[in-house]
Length: 340
Image 1: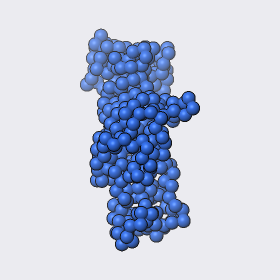
Image 2: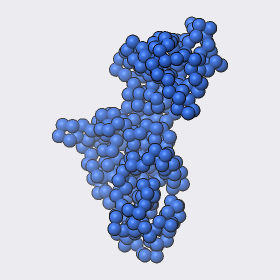
Image 3: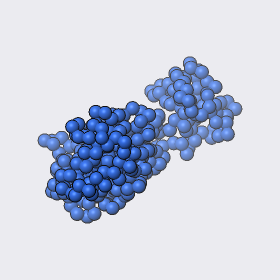
Image 4: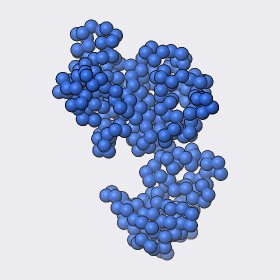
């Protein structure tokens, strides 16, 4: 399997810099996610791997070989786009077969390979249909099948689930992850959805405005975000940032402080008031019940903070409340937004 290396890779468009000095390595067989808001540079980086965008400076390497000037057709990558890009006049079987047909592989071999891929993706009964006769999830499977049918060395996904409804996205991200594990192909997956990134990635890179903020496993990103941007971007609800941006607290690490030292959410974690490393006070502005947990929103002087719990708070909307957090729940950042 292929190791992909980015060595000080930058992209410039007439003074605009969508990517700045990006350096990291994706390991063989890894499912690696590029995540960030619109304009962060993640799709540009993916297109540079595919050869659809040129590299302004630096090098992209496959197993140590510089790929900057290698034409896209010779890079041996399979790519799935957001719009799936299926040929509307071809059947599912013909769409799957197309990458092999243009290479003039034997018809018997193509037919056998189409059958294998259709069975792998559970679309055997769809082979005679046209794309317009398929659901979004079915079209997505066909697009994936067309990308993997020739067994590429690298698999690229550019926000492939964006057009699906929320329930189908959850189902399809599980299917894609299982498929990648079975194939073992080095995969780069681009998304703006941090939940998608956190649930799918072996490791992830968080980008913003062309700058790489952190590369880590989803667990490491959540527990030790490298910057305030990462802290706010990864996690739902996002981390509360207080004290002029120098202190962060995850919603589940806040508790309501009572005079007897108990907290309203989890009494087994009760502590006396003086043991909290940080406390803030404000007014309960809203309480939301979302099925498996409660979210409370408390308005401070200069911030609205979120508190997550598995139990209903005893406070009510309009009540004055004090929130506390233990030292283990504090994330400290410097004035530039970097983790201390």
